[in-house]
Image 1 (cartoon, rainbow, N blue to C red):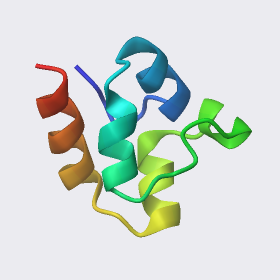
Image 2: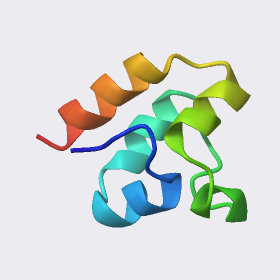
Image 3: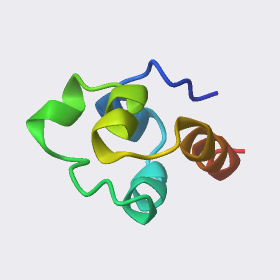
Length: 63
């Protein structure tokens, strides 16, 4: 299960199909250095996105 306190980098490494979901939400910085330390929740705040919507989409993609 993916949680909002996980870093983008750890999510992408653990679940290889998640970059597609992140891209759909406008998070194109999946491979950038800040993604290694930035949590999903922090990224949503920066991008003005709903953490709940992202969490649902990510967890649905890894079922």
